[in-house]
Image 1 (spheres, rainbow, N blue to C red):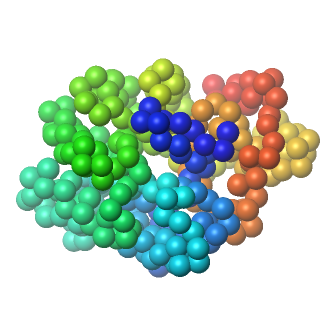
Image 2 (cartoon, rainbow, N blue to C red):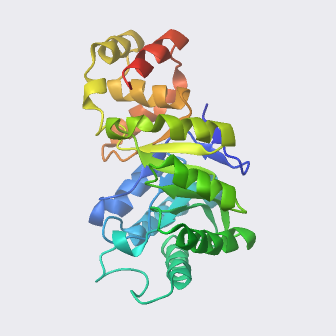
Length: 279
């Protein structure tokens, strides 16, 4: 389970390094993550929360040390205007939505020192549906030009929106990236739809939003049994239920430990027991 296969036949790493809120330390953290073994990097063209330009510097540093671009799964996002700091964004407020997407994408390619983005994500749905289709059609152009490998959406907690997008898109979404937390019912219906359609579900806030699970007697017991940290147990569980977690750790020790989830498997009854904690 080192990789997950999307509906575009793209091999995605089973854990992706998240670069939000790393600020001026982004270059070093990205470099460390790759050197420690991360094969996937997630970012966004959203200066408010990401330093995508410094992600690019971290990638460059890794390439200079011998890492190959084709060995890294690179994912970034178009962030609609509601998620931007209007004083610092990659497009103008009065640009047509298609122009906003185009400018953001070109900025991302420059920032990330690449002509190809493995996975390009709409950071959050836009409304009404006709506007969502305009954004998606522009993103499809990048796919058609072979500038991106697959498309996806983030922060989409309404199954009807995902179904609408899937049914109306020529290039079907391959990824949905959502906060994995109790308030959304852990996206049970969305995850079921994803499984049916070959859409990879990526989770963020996987640890932060679930301290009650990490501190549970069950996870403590499993951590002791497998001689792993509770975070590793939970990350492994997520893989077992077809989820690719984002990992934003700034600890090089945790980077090494968390990537070791490939070295063990939970029993089916243990997976079932942890699943009950999501109810």
